[in-house]
Image 1 (spheres, rainbow, N blue to C red):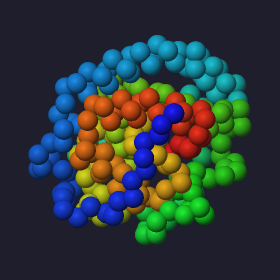
Image 2: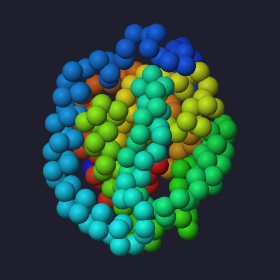
Image 3: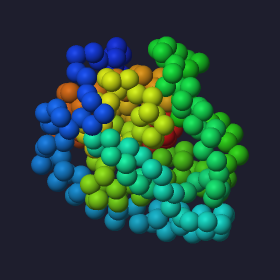
Image 4: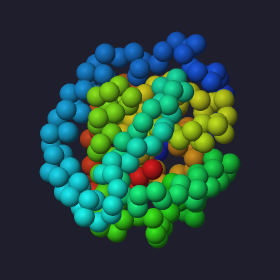
Length: 238
């Protein structure tokens, strides 16, 4: 499968947004009725298609670890507004997020371009917080299937920037805030372009590139490329 070419962009400097990018003209990716209709139709279709995954995931999580099936996490979405992002729970209930917070904070502060040794900005190898029986959900990103509900709610899009955590946004430079001018996505340009082989700044640059050059054809190419990344390339999840 032909993959989308990975871009190497310097941090954009021409367009700077405020804390809430609502003051700017809305990007085409946000105002497109076609994109929203595609989101709703595809979310409904994928929810039906993924019903066996729901059954297996719910049963496995319940048997393997006490606690809720869904993991609810506060993420930052359109215009800097917080929303509850849903995932299948793949960690033991009550596991601390401090380790992940330190990891991501370090990646944000890193200003180097990616190298072979700079991989895996969002993943921890051998993380003991992960439930062994459902590690496959994380490895294939199928733990993010419940975010289809977020799409139907209007919190997210099928394609868009990765939804950041509050402590990420707190460290954003002005140019990175442009990522908040559209709905975040379940998949995106970064996810199908080598994701965990990139630095945090490269991810943000690709998201800004996506926003500024958005088209339905780009979304369709990303959607078509996503299964390859999930099941063959194994880029990893956020």
